[in-house]
Image: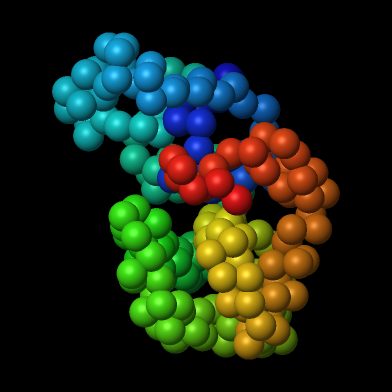
Length: 211
């Protein structure tokens, strides 16, 4: 079954999908939609008028077409075995992922501000936002957020931490468990190769915000 991701030439909301697919060694095609193509083509109109809240990214898995980033992520987590070993772990993964999405939403809001006026306040509050993840990972089984296998939530946290280190390189200095967690996951062979690739390094986080 062929997998196809359609998105803009930025990391944005689709990067966590790319990271999941890359780490799991899943082959997929990517259709890159430039802003010029988006404005001039019929794709935007078809997405806006789609009754299923159509927008980018679009993910196609054979004859299944999905919109909404988190719906795509959960579909892939179930398909690729990234949703825990049982319902208990799945519930805990959902809980951790919701907390990550709360921080992600704050980060996205900051990224789209026209100036840096909100950055100081954001960074001041960041340690409080990171403490639950530090505490979770500081236990005896701190390899992953939930259980003994990488999950949906881990991919979301890894890419969010990478982007926060771009925003403020010292942001993890007070969080040794998060530092070791990020280092360990980024050393996974497929992730190491991807994070050092030109595709990743040259792709801006959002338009105009290049690493």
